[in-house]
Length: 381
Image 1 (cartoon, rainbow, N blue to C red):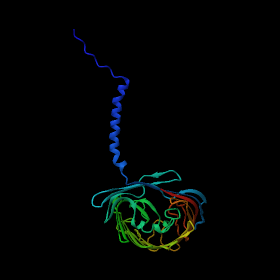
Image 2 (image 1 turned 135 degrees about the vertical axis):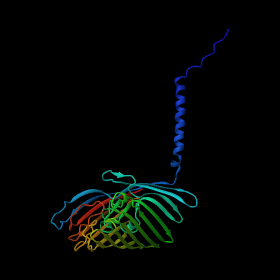
Image 3 (image 1 turned 90 degrees about the horizontal axis):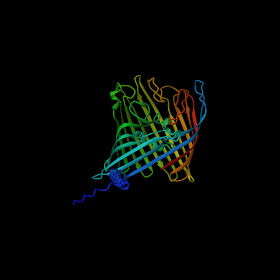
Image 4 (image 1 turned 30 degrees about the vertical axis):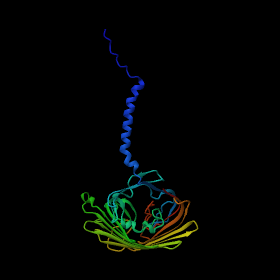
């Protein structure tokens, strides 16, 4: 008599769960392996700066008799959030990258990669990178200003405004700028450093001219002494076939408890109606006083000269088109990363001048004098 073969038992509910779990575990392991290079990269750093102020702003009567209203406001002084990293390659070469984003504490807005963002290579012979980055002309002297980048920064006069991020057609007036679509090379040798940048002419296909940017800077550091020289060309920014250019020279020195800096700048615009030039000067002081420091800056720009009839940024030709700016404040560190500070800054415009704060501008007419008093906090991480 034959015996029937016993049929296998149906899996239990517990047995049913084992197979899917094995699949989930295998999938998780695969995803972890794929993500491992990013997680295991010990050369990635997260950094940032949170910088905001309560400001009390007033504006005097303009030449035409109008006057802007006084106001209290919360301002953002270019807070940032960023990530940077590097990967060692062969023969002493490193791959480098950085993604720096803008964020605003005052209103909660922001933009990824809107600030210094790059990808490139670093070697003993220098650093070559591409991206959205401060021009060498901008970087050459921004450390001279103890209130860069805030409402009180020297960019109100020096550089003719501040282009936080621009290409060859969005902002054609400012020489204090971060340039989109730019290629950079930097090198240092025994205290002598140099940098060049090319803002590629990508707008050639969209405008009836061939705009591009070329920026150069060199510096020499010897002990506490810094000497710098910078030059920048804006090709076809105002009109076809004509180039704007700017040059500046600076010197700074660090004494035991005092730091002083000074610079001279000459801007030259070439428009369809003629030439426009303007000279500017800036001096700064940082004086240690106990734990904190007194900080001051003074900027002066003369009348614009030349035959051009256009107003470029805040620069125009004619009498009474100059201005000066005075800033004084106190910085008190609560720790290595956190500080409280306060400042007063005033721009005195001649009757035909309309210089405004470059960051957190107010909006003024010719002859009006904007001024601000700020109480602020800064934290870096």
